[in-house]
Image (cartoon, rainbow, N blue to C red; front, side, top):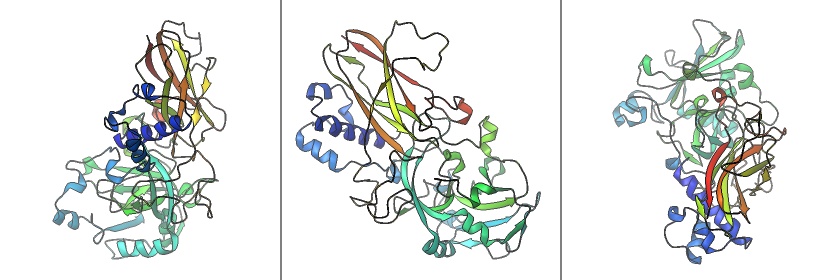
Length: 417
């Protein structure tokens, strides 16, 4: 999990508990306040709250990178030569020679018809969309960051090629040093590109994060963003889209024994839990929840003695004595470099008048949660957390397999002395 998210989470939780009068300074010292510095005065607290950021700054995102050397680290001259700057970027949108789709007007660098940066910005004036999305790896248990992404729906560009028939799937590729061994690619069914299922956001050709143009490290000048999917579907350094009649996926991640068509899962993780607590001391626990395609109804926690026998034939602890945690409301200030207060432009999933989310927690975003344990007898304990999604499925169900994304039930140790 990105360090900035941890720090901001701690700031949120500090405010949450103090406003409720639920905890004193002694209990706060159980949490990792080193992320805020040693000063825990009221002035420092007020300053931390003012600086709270829900969105992750571009340079603070966790990063999963591919390429040797990393494509954005090339010298400026090389970046310009390979189309990795805004003024030199161009996008091919062409038919697959191995399984041709019938196109009336392909966008081709070779033919001089490729989409360039000015053309993309022209489309953005009429078609740009913006939405929140957490970027996360399907094999990772923590988010890389959450941002406000902006781009043009991929379907808008696909329609520019005047597709006629024999189109079943979209393959797309990022720049990776012109080396076939480093090629990174992904794909989507054409149906998902052309039509958004109810409540979904469009797949976008993305050029901004938190209101700023993408840096090279974040996949700029242009990347793909697929809102409901893990990061490997959101290819960085986008340069080529191939429209194909092939019925199969061609994703690089298939080589890693992954489910390449998996949607993001809903799951909870701890962020702050004390390792040791004095008897009689209230115990604050905090965490985050990633909200996947099935939404989020609640977060729960379960405290059990370390030497207690676990339920038989119940590997997911469905019969355990789970307790509900508190889900925090949506933030008033979103951070990430944006002005304080509501968003200044329309954002998908937000009310046009109030510029606040129409539902919270939002799918494909994050939520903070907290709980307070009291009257815990001395002893050694295990503490677990889980989510219940909108359909009533308890983590790790309905998809407990790691191939489609990790969402195992996390366990931490706690000692009360």
